[in-house]
Each structure stands twice: as C-alpha cells, then as structure tokens.
Image 1 (cartoon, rainbow over the protein chains, first blue to last red):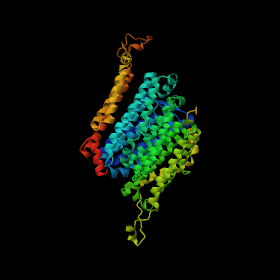
Image 2 (tube, chains in turn yellow, cyan):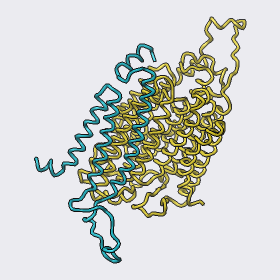
Image 3 (cartoon, rainbow over the protein chains, first blue to last red):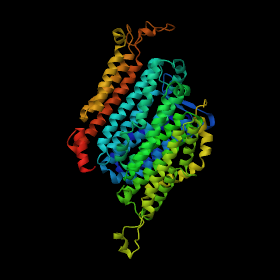
Image 4 (cartoon, rainbow over the protein chains, first blue to last red):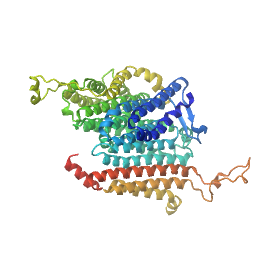
Length: 499
Length: 130
C-alpha cells in the first residue's frame, strides 16, 4: 500500500471527480461532503510521500510497471513532495470553505458541475507537480487550465469575457511549452525528465536545444503570469467566484513557478540556464518590473479583490527574482516563498470571500467597523497583512529575508531595492484596509441612531468559512516560527547541489 | 537558400501556419476569428509533431512475426517513429476540449452582450460601468 501512495494522489481525485455529477444527480447535498472527504486522501498521501522522501531520499513510481524512459514515471524528490503537500493542503482548506460561498454565488443546478471541475483542477495541479515526464506535464497542465477556464467563466458579470481571453493566452502558453517539448524530443528522443537531464549536457551547444529552452521559458512565463505577459490574470482572477479565486490565486501561478524551477535546474543543469542563456537576467528584470507594476496598480484599486489580484502579479515577481539570482540563498527564498505566498494568498482571498458573503461588498471604503462585525475574520486578515508587509515572526518575513540575501549575494542591488520597496507598498496597501476597518469612525448620519454610540452587531462568517480562515492565519505565524526547521529538513535538499 | 528552405520545408510550413494563427489571435477583433486563429495555431503544432516522426523510405511501425524472429535485429531506419503521432492524439483531444470550452464561453458572452465584436463589447462594458 505504502508504495502506491504516489499514484493515489492523482488517481483518487481524478476518479472521484467523475463520480461527482452522479452524486449530484442523486443527492445535491452530498457533493460537498464527498469532495471534502476525497481531498483528504491526496493530503494524507502527499504527507506520506514527503515522509518517505525525508527518510529515504528521492524515489520514483512507475505507472503500470513500465520502466522509464519508455513508461511514465512519477519522480518524487524533496522539491515536489513539498509543493504537493502545499497544493493538497490548500485545496482541502478551500474545499471546506466553499460550501456557503458556492451556495450564495452560484445557481443551484451548477453546484455539481462546480465540484467536478474543482476536483479536476486539483488533479491537474497535483499531476503537474508529481510527474517526471515532460509530455505528461503538458497533459496535466491542460487538465488544470481547462477546468480553470470553465470555473472562471461561471463567475460574475465580466467573467465569460475574461475567461475567453485567458483561454486564448493560456493556449498560447501551453502550446509554447509543447513546442519546447517537441524540440527537446527531436534532439534527444526522450520525454522523461531524468533521462533528458542525462542526455542534454552533451547537446548544450545545439541550436535546437536553445530554441526549445526559449519556448519553455516563454510558455511558463505566460502560464505563471509574469509581467508583461500577465494581462489575462487580473480580470480572470477577479471575476471568478470567491471559492475559485481562493483556489487558483495561491496555486496556479505557484505551480507554474515550480515547473520553471524544475525545468531550469533539474532538466537543464544550472550552468546551462545561467551561463549559456541570458534568460536569468531577463527574467530578473521582468520580475523587478512585475513587483513595481503590481504594487502601483494595486495602490490604484478600490476593490479589495482587484487589489489582491495585482498583489499576486507582484508576488510572482518575488519568486522569479529568487530563481533568477540563481544562488542558494535566492532559490531557498523562492521555494520558501512558494509555500508562504500560497498560505498568505489563500488566507487573504478566503477573508475577502467571507466579507463579500456577509456584507455583499468588496469596496474598501465600505469596510467601516468590520472589526466589530467580523472580529475573527479581520484578525486573520490583519495577521496575514502583517506577514505580507514582512514583520517577523510571520512567515512572509523569512522568505523575503532569504530573497534579499540572495539578491545581495548576487550583487543585484536594484532587485534588492525592488523587494524592499514592495514591502513599503504592501504596508501602504494593507494599512489602508486595516484603517478603514478598525479606525474609521461611523458616519455622522448613522452615529446617533443609538444615542450617539452606534452599536455594531457581531455578524461573523459561518463556521465552514471561519475555520479554514483561522487555520490559515495560525499557519502564517507557525510556518514563520518553524521556517528554520522547514529549510533545514526539506528546502536545503531541494536546492541543486551545485549551488 | 532555396535548397535550405526546401530541405526543411515542414518547419517552414509550421512556422508560417503558427504565425497566421498568432496574428489572428492577437490582431483580430472578432472573437470567433480569434478562436479560429487558436485552432490554426494548435494545428500547426500538431503538423510539426507529425512531420518529425517521418523517415524517407520507411514504413508503418508494425513488426510481422515471421520476418523478425528471436535474435534478429530490427532496423530502426525502416520504420516511422510512431511516438510523436501518439502524442498528437492526446494533443488533438486537448485542442478539441479547448475549442469546446471556448465556444461555450462565447455563447455566454453573446447572451450577455448580444455581439461578438471585441470593441463593441468593450464599449458596452464601459457604458454600463462593469
């Protein structure tokens, strides 16, 4: 049983997603408990896989018993076991949260199809992370993208248009990735990542390989939403239903960043990605622009969800900066930030969804007295906001610390300045919201209806929403305190040994 | 120069097709034309893959049991490479699914705005403030 855990991570949600329409046709109410119960399985399996990797080192699972490079292989090392746990955990939390929000935002007959797509999206994301085969990765990429397009399209007013734009640009990204795979296949005759890694060094000067690498990079930059190819991201993430944004905003871009790390440092040797192509410096500068641009656009927003979406654009820049400096500190920071940012973004989007559920608004200026109305939700928001700004011991501080150390070690002072600058922008962004919610007095028109003292009724979000939010907020602190342990036991093995 | 183009004509064709698709996706204002562009783009990719499996003078990769007994080596050059073709079966399925999802979203768009011209939709959205 234990050796089958790796396959179960994919097989269970995939098969379960096919059963959701049947269950929904029979009993609509059972869809939600079924999805939550199913998503516990990948979490347990990925924790088991992580445990195996930490005790015995990396291993591979052969699908159908076919030996690589002919068969498809799931290659699991510290890096993807770690990302698997993040993806599985956050999708479980969002699934628990989704009940009330979906009931309110979607029509009743769409709930079964929503949960089908939800499970397919999670399957695709987990598959992209676990697979050791370049073409299999493309298939999972398309599974996750296609379900993501459909999930976005069922959102609010502008959603179908945003989803269509995302389909067009996302398809270009996926096709570029596929072209990259094709070029590598022409030169090597292999699709297995470990096999490619052993054949490629002899061919590094071949133009075919260089073109293939360029296609890979552009495809992943599109999928990851790095500036200036992020244009699909704000509209589609903002118009999607709350539960969908809370799932895709933390995970889609992070998984694309993971694939980028995997290709650049495992399939290709670091010395190829760094020395033979100027791709690292280009990506680094794009990331700097992404951080500044995302921050400034976020400042201009009055809709809190749109503000968070632009922060996602900036956060992609963080991870790419860590990758582009290509040293141990920077990459440690990037991998740590994949986790921290996923947790923080999930928490923020869950909070925004909960506020929207209770008050029906996302306009920051209407957040007065939310601290009294929804004390726990706002406390979670504040903790995460402090973490986004980078105040220890919240987890956001530690990944920024490593990222900045990495940029300084590489002598990239502008990059370091951009990171620090972004912390300041985040401070302005989040304190603006916190000020509105905690400190603004009630408007005079309403102030005297209770003899001068307006009493705000507590009206907290329902428990199914509140529990995931509080768990995420606690994690923001706990992961910060234990980030030293996480680095020493997992991440330091995930960074290539040559750094 | 001409020999160079002719000797690698499959790559030239796929690049030209891909650029036509890319132009339609970026330059056209009509959403259906964008979708057609996307299909051309994906077909270019499929043709690229199919063409790299081809070998001159080779045949379909089916071994007959009589002529290739035990210990007899198989001449790889005699057979086409079937793997890219098999990969493209998957890619064709993916492209059909993408087209399906895109058409479904276009129906939603049309129901909301009563048009599929991008600039008209943008104008409607600007006027209604959404």
